[in-house]
Image (cartoon, rainbow, N blue to C red):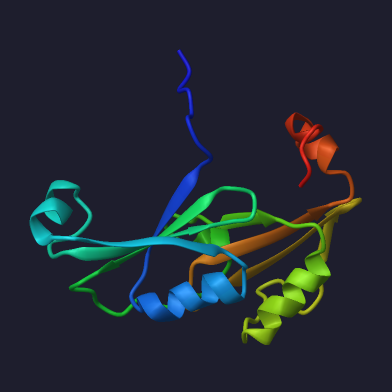
Length: 161
């Protein structure tokens, strides 16, 4: 039996500096603010998310997915990761499929982002371009542009991307 999803996928990211991270995701990636909620310590412990309380800010992409930025009350500074992405324990990244990767990269560069893949997009297959970077707290982000999105996601044929 398959899991029947009722809404687009949501991703939660643990963060330390919530105002800075919210500004980055709104300004650099164009996410829209949805809500901000504080969860008290007793509920945070029940949810296995934090010993103390935490604040969650929900942001939404232009395609309907949501990114939740979760900032615990009692948090240590995040350790900066070095080396290739997949060499990291529990490696993960968020993929943003964009219409114009060069414009997206320029917008991120204007926010001070440096790309792990260098200053230019990388053509990994004919017509498939990508670039990897990190947000201000080190979460890995991937930008991808497909020359023919329908060849990658034929389920989107009748939807504008």
